[in-house]
View (cartoon, rainbow, N blue to C red):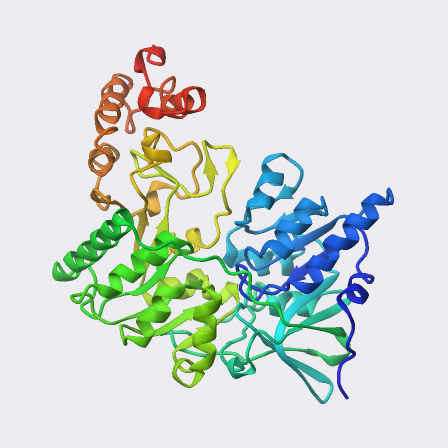
Length: 503
C-alpha cells in the first residue's frame, strides 16, 4: 500500500495559524521547498483577506529562499530557531518583526525533546524515497540530516513528505540516522573515527503518521562560492603553515587531525588551500557542512573520509556526487546535527576547528554573528559546538572589510559568541596570532600583529590608554567601542580620534 499523494496546496490547507512546523535539512541542503513556498502563498491570501496567519519554524540550520525568504517577506513567521543566513529573513529580524532565537545547533533536537520550544505540530521532510515496511515507513533523506528524526517522531499532527526527484535515489544509504536518548539515560555515542556508522540509513516512523506525499522536482537552493582571492589564498596558506609547524613541534599528532570547517566561500577557500599544500598529510573531515572544495579533495585522494550533517554544495557538485555514488558511498556519512555537532564526539576524535569571525577583540573574544553588536548577520550555527570542544580551535578572517573602513581586530568585540577561553588561534592574511599559553596582555600583542597595518598604531594607542586603568585585562571603557562608534557616525573606523573618548 503506497502513501497518499497530495498537492502542496492540499498539504498547506492542513496547517493552521500559530502552529509549529519542524523541517528537514541543514542549510538549504535537504530543506523542503515546495510546501514552504505554498505556505507563503497561503499567508499572502490570508493577510489580504484580513485574517491572521503566522507559523513557527524549527529547523536543523538555515533554509533557502522558498522558506526563510518568502515566509519572512509575507510576514508569516512568528518564531524561528536556530540559525539562518537568508538576507530577506535577516532584514525582517533586524527590523524586530520576527522572534528569532539563536541556538547552538548541537542542542536543537535536545531542546525540542525537552519541550523548551513548545509542541511540534507538523514535520515537513524532504526525501528521495519513502518505503512502507509493514506498519513502518522508511524515509530516505536527501542532502541534509538536521533534526529530521526528532521532529518526525514528535510531530503531533503528522508528517508531510516532499518527495523530490531532483535528488537521486542512488544516494540511499548515505545517511546514518541516530537519535540521542532522553536525559538522564543517554548512552555513549560509539563513534571513534569519522567514517563510523552507528544508526540506520533512513528515518523510521509509524507509517500511519505520514499524512501525504508531495511530489516535486526542485534543485537545492544552493549558494555559489566566490573564487579564492589573494586574501583567502594567503589565509589558507597561513593556516597550512601553522598546522605544519604544530605537527613538526609535536603539538598535534603526526597522523594529523580531523578537520572541521564552517560554511561559506572563505571557509571553502581555506580548506581548498589546505588540501593543495603537499606537506599536509591526507586527512579526514568531521564537520557539519561539506562544501565543494573537500568533495573535490576526496576525488584527489586528499580527503580520506568525511562525516557531516549536510552536503552544502553547488548543484553541479551535487550532480557529480550522485553520478559517482559508487566512489562516494563509503567515504561520506551524513548524520543528524546532534551527532555531527556533538561535543562528546568532537572531543574524542581530536578535531581542528576552522571557523570565520566577523571581528576579534585584542584579548581573543570572537564575534561571529552581529554587525556592530546589534544587526544580526547570521546565527552562531555550530561554531561554538566545535570551538569549545576541539583539540585546536582556529578562527580566520580578513583583516578588514568594507574596503578597509572596518577593522576585524578591535579593542573590544561589540558582541561575543566565543570567549577567549576557547579560542586558540586567530589567522588573517597578515599571519597567525597563537593565543595558547598567553596572558591577556600577551594575547593583545599577538592579535595586533595580525591586524591590518592601517589599524596597528590605533590599537597600540588604545592599549597605552587602557594601561592607565590597570587590572588583569586593560580597558578604557569610555573608548572601548570608539572604533565602532566612529564607523557608525563617519563610515570609517580609521577616522577615530581617541581624544573624543579618552577621559
